[in-house]
Image (cartoon, rainbow, N blue to C red; front, top):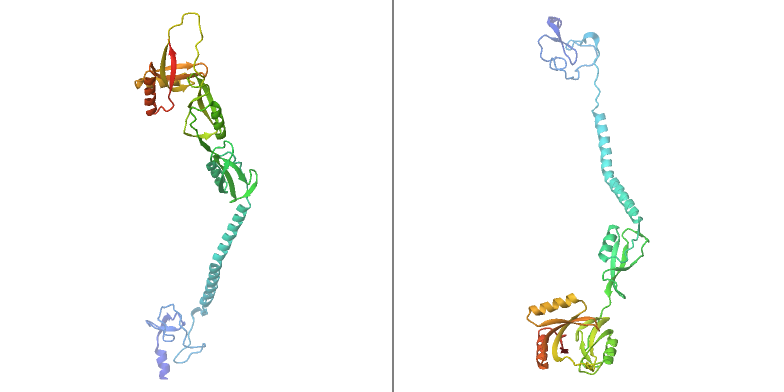
Length: 343
């Protein structure tokens, strides 16, 4: 009876536990049934089962008879899905580099094979300089080997003589082309022999054996006819074939007998230093000699059609010889003595 009386003396207010739904006394801070703080939304597992209460735990009334819904625990599902996704991503990461490498390698091989199978027409390089031919082949992606050859004829050094393969053939990129270039015409040199005082026939034979062509000019001289008086470039080496000027004696000049009184003549000597076919060249040489203080003048030989540059008119042969020796000592090696008649 006391328990019932005590129970009956409890004054219940309008407070309800939001967790277990029990009626609570007014101004209570904690639920006496589930222990939850009054006013909290955290769900606490009820301390009782069933709808029947006891004197210590009276039955709980749920306002409006609204059933309490249990929240589903979705964390395991989320964890499972996340794990599967991470595994899938890891597999893709592991496999992707190989895939990219294989794809890159496939594309590279495909491009290489395409380049290798690309055909290039061999250009015509004959008669081009080897440096120009090298630029052409390089622009086409072709390699180059150079072989130098000595060739007959006047083929300029460095020009392409032939190529392997020949022009027009189809080549693959990177093909090594062989070009043959000229080393220039074969050069033969010979020394001009000193045959002064010999005969014309001796000069012809000696020059012929060396590949030299003598060009003879006759001049009056006290020496026997055909005697060699002068040879151009004696002792020098010349490229064969060559042409060399040779002066020979035409014998002592004869004067024709005349019935009329002859104009008195004087024998004089001079030194011939140069001869030219072009008058302007002879004129320049004369002026240069005059500028150096020499008595220089020009004569013209109609037989050989040459302009001769002389120095001096000496009445004494010995004076002329002294001038000749002096001129030869200062570089006029081809100078020689001339005897002439002056009116």
